Length: 298
Image 1 (cartoon, helix red, strand yellow):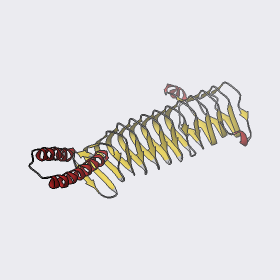
Image 2: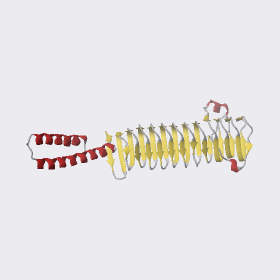
Image 3: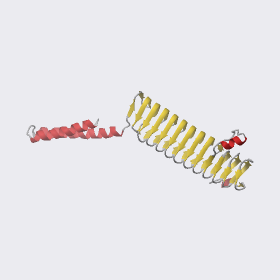
Image 4: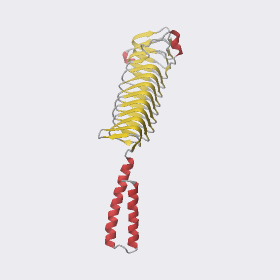
């Protein structure tokens, strides 16, 4: 029901009072009609509130909605709210406020002015912007440009090709893979493998199983120096292998097996358990220190 129906029953009640005051209706009919109109008014208000809170979808293209998914193509605007199904957007999409859904897939441009909570996978190709936080129960994959205003928390793995930015911490329990450029305005935490091919800036600690920054990349002499370095402003902790190339680390580096590759600078101390290798083009402020496996913690 719409707001107009609420207004209609309010006007009917007002008219009923006037008719009763003028003697145009007897007391019995007045009481019966008033009870009926009041009930209708309460129902209209309740339905209006439910309708107002439900997600509204406007599209200038094609919309197909089933029990399991909402698919739109063209230019689409979603008010936000709880959508208990998959969302698939092809073209230009805008979400006005917080939204909650199952799987989320976009191809083209998607902009959200609130938070996004997805109880499935997140898959975006093109431009993806979320002003609030991004929470996902499974994996997230981005191809193109992705910008999250606040923290990104995933129970699965994140894969980002292109440009990726999150305004808070990034937690991806099953691993992270970046190719291109990435910026994390907080800690990057994972229980899986963290791989970077390109440049990453982490304004906090970097924690994972294996941590591999530019491993296997063939850098030719001084050409490598012209590339912007990755920056880790906190500590690096890998419970397995750690490989860093063309990277500045402000804190310590700890790993089971540690390789400090070319053009890497570590301001703290490098701690290793089983193996250490330092490229002659790397710069360590302190000598590496061998530790026991029990001390492989931040």
